[in-house]
Image 1: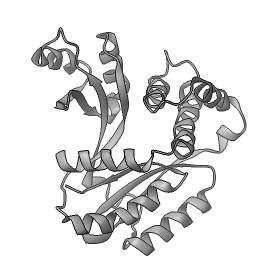
Image 2 (image 1 turned 180 degrees about the vertical axis):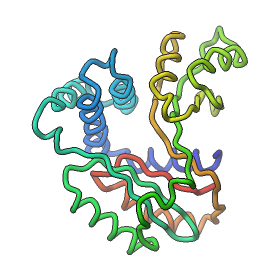
Image 3 (image 1 turned 120 degrees about the vertical axis):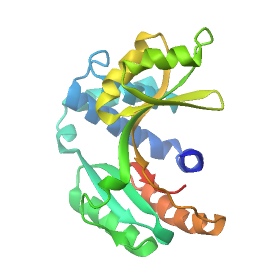
Length: 236
C-alpha cells in the first residue's frame, strides 16, 4: 500500500490544484451527505467528515454553508452515487466513484475514456472482490499519547490498522465503522485532517515509470471529469 498510496496521493494533489475543479467536487459531497443524514454535522458523521475534507483544501466557509443549504433544494434530489469498474493498461484495475445528476452523460464519459486509454469498462461487481472497502482517517498524533496506547484506545472504534507517514497517522477500519471510528478519534480530542471511505487493492501490480506515465493519461482524464469523486487502482 506504500508506493501506491503515496503515488496516488501526490498525483491527486497535483491534478486537483485548481480550485475551480476541486471545490465543486467537495461541495457536491457535502450536499449529498447533508441530504442523506441531515444538515447538522454534530449528528451526521459523513457530513462532518465532508466539511473537514473541504476545510483541508481551504474551501471558504461561505462555499461550505452554501453546499449544505443546497441539500434542501430540488437539485440535491437529482444526485446519485455510481460506481464504475474498468481495466487500464498493463493489468491495472480501476474503481471510479461518481456523483452525478445525469447517468447517461456519466456512463458515456466513462466508456469513452476507458475505451480510448484503457481496455474498457467491466460489468458492475466484477472487481469488487479485488478491493477491500475501508474507512480511513488522517490525523496528527497528540504529543502526550504513546502509539501503543493510542492503538488500544482506537480498537473500540473499530481500528484494524494504524500507520504513520511523515508525521501523519492513518487509521483504518471496516467501512461500516466509519462513523464509530471518526467519533472515537474526536472524543479523544484529536483533530481529524481528513476522513473518507477508500477501496484498498487486495493485490497490486508493479509498473515501470514509463508504464505509469501511460496509465496516468487515463487517470488524468478520469479525475478531470466533474462527476468523479474518487478513483482507486491496484498500482503497487
